Image 1 (spheres, rainbow, N blue to C red):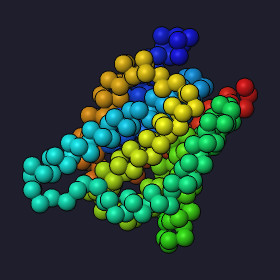
Image 2 (image 1 turned 90 degrees about the vertical axis):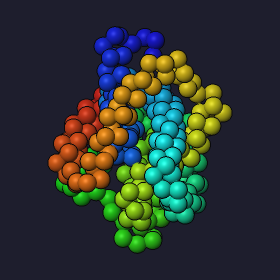
Image 3 (image 1 turned 180 degrees about the horizontal axis):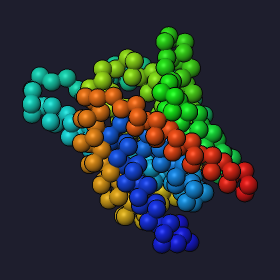
Image 4 (image 1 turned 30 degrees about the vertical axis):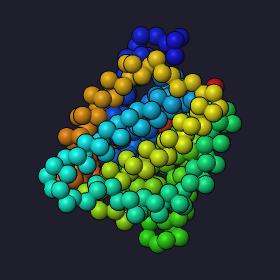
Length: 258
């Protein structure tokens, strides 16, 4: 990213603040709700995916440790904030598609990957706008959603909405975010290992200024999360969906034009 202008660095910093806010506030979406914006600034997914991966690993670990310590201090007989039984179940279903997706990421041209990302995000955006998020009603559909989410997560880290469609119906609401954080930690570790093996740059120098940006959003999101537990916010998701759809349409136009 050494060839970017100052305003592009500024925009990337703001987007990472947004990414940190979404990740800690919702428990998912740090990638799916920031990649379209990032790719409009600089159309290189393999520059941003390692940055997002390392940040997700860092902040998910911190959140899990702090939440479990807080629960232990409040009640020595507390249950883990992570539903480990269900986590093992969904990992068993997702692991093979995840690995296939990681391989696809490494071999896929950047322009094709950008188009796939924008198409997938557009579909998610429409479900937010009409307030009809993906829902799963039986084990077969569960498995399809989890496998598809695992594959998309392997290619671009944006499979969360499909995975949420399943997990949200089987994990208690107060345990959902931390269970997802534990899942993301495992899945992202696999992706980072693949990046390192393939010689993909982890953009370590840029973490020096982007980690603080994400931290600002992260701590704002922690406060927002408690409000999310107490109230549904369909208007928020509709506005978010419209914004994402517009950005994805612009991104697709640029990608196809290029």
